[in-house]
Length: 288
Image (cartoon, rainbow, N blue to C red):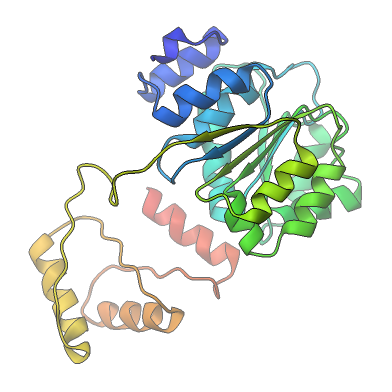
């Protein structure tokens, strides 16, 4: 199925075409038609499957622009995912005049978010804690919400957000569409569906591939004392302009960053102990 085959606004089709998308991914082909009908969904799909557009398109297609109160809310487990999802929704709706999408998350001054909310926002993408903060401050009223999405629902529940999620869902109208997207469907996700959804349709996209397509993966064995030197040699061999290095601890991140700088590599580190401002600065530097 192609995006042109969907019965959606031409503005959305045009924006998606400019992004460069043509054919729907499996999760999009199964979830979007039901999402457009207003059906509640529980979708199991891996990261990288195109799930953001799978819920963004049904959300955008029914936004009523003259109403500048929140009509859809997407909950995400992390600030970074919040920004990513808000960005993708903004791109998909870039041809819809006067559409307002806002990401709200901790670590960013709440005053700035408050001012934007007061001016009017159609779609809110947020972490549970900051969304509740805005609700309790009177900045965010969810009475007009027609669509709720829990993105990476299993991860949010693993992080202890269940009470926050239930609080937010209880603040939305009962007559709403609720879509859950999750890599796994543990019992807690099912329980949320049982309480807050209406006869949800379950969609599962099987993942037969353990790695992303067209990505070659290699590994090399070395002694722990030789790891850093081996890493430097690999970097030299690759001769890439941009490299991501993942470590299993914050201490390792700091060690690698410090010693690569000594080797005169241009490097930035990012981990959970850094302030949001510092993390944003790193991400913005790498995006340029």
